[in-house]
Each structure stands twice: as C-alpha cells, then as structure tokens.
Length: 246
View 1 (cartoon, rainbow, N blue to C red):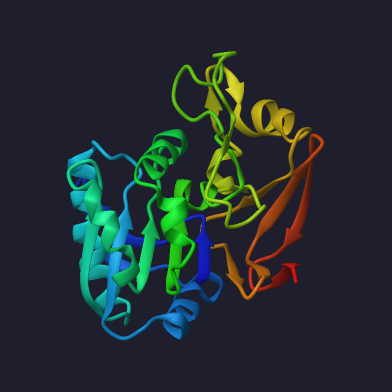
View 2 (tube, rainbow, N blue to C red; view 1 turned 120 degrees about the horizontal axis):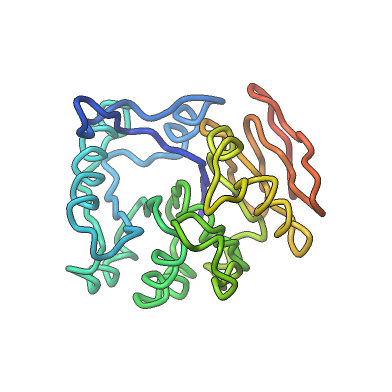
C-alpha cells in the first residue's frame, strides 16, 4: 500500500456559500505525485469522517467525482461509506484508491473502528489518500486535538486514542490557520498543542504540505514544524522535502 497524508487535498471551493468542484492542490508537487501513483480509471471509496452528516458527505463525494477528472486523475466510479451503507466497506479489496476524509477526529475514529477499517486495510495494495482528520487517524496513537466548543475546557475529553497504525507520525494539520485560533479561551497552539506535546511529538503541517509513505520510507514535502516538549521548530520549507523515516 502506498500512502499520501495531507493537511488539505483541495478539490472544492466555496462560491456563494456552496461548495463546487475545483482542481486538487499542487503545492509542493502534490497533484504531480498523485498522478504518478494513480491507476487509470481508478475505483475510489471515501471513508467519511461524520457517518451521519449525509449532506456534507454527499457534497464531498459530488465535488471529488468532478475534481479528480478535472485534475487529470481518471476514475471508473467513486463511492462513499458512511452511516447509510456501512456494509460497503466489504468492497474495499476491490478498490484502487481509499480516501480518508477530513472532519472531527474522534467521530471518524469511532466509525473506522465500527466498520473494522484497520483490519480491512491490512491486505490493501492500492493507494490510500487522506486529508486532515483522515491523516491524523492513520497514526498508531492518534492525537485527537480539541476542536469543538467545550472540548478544550473539558478535563474528561480524551486526547489520545488508538488509530489505524499506519504510521507513528502525529500530524497536526492546518497550522497556518490554527496558529491564530482560540478555543474555549485557550490559544490552540501555544496553550493546547504545546502542552500536549510533552507526552508525544506533533508534526504541524500547513495546507499544501503532505507526507508520502512507501516501502517503509516516510517523506515530508512542504512547510512543516515539529512541536515537542512545548517548543516549535521549523523542519521543512515549501519547495523542499525531508525524509522522516527510511
């Protein structure tokens, strides 16, 4: 299995308040990398992040159905697995591409466990493409950073949960936005992520940055920062690549 874990995939943009298809991001050669790995007329399955948010899931699927061909990636068909059709996961071995969508990390994590995704991916030999929450849930020990109102202030909110076990990297997406954000009166980066980094290292990526995993080698492309023991260190710039594990 080959993997690309992104902060953001692109594929849609907002026009008058609604999402419409758009070409995928090619920052740091992301789309070019996808083209090199993409099988012609790929069969694609989306594992949705919010199994009961049907309107959002339908919108994501509809946009990507057009965005992939617009981006030069041919598809045979694209299907979505959510709360309406959990048994669709049984078709996973037939797929060429599995997409792990973005959304609320704990919600998607619970759905992945319900459908047995970790076990079903063990023999998957295609391309796994994830963004945002989907990328975060690929870790062995997932950092479920507080993101909804009330979560940061809740001492009982569980921030570390078991994941798919596809990498040891704890990706922290959308850094360029989150570094300015507040949640429940806390600074998302300085007050929350820094404090949590004393127990586990985080890798903060800007949208347009991504990680590839192939044959045991993990490579980072684009601007990214290591958050560890309450400190922030820039480890890669746009236009550059760094091997994280070989």
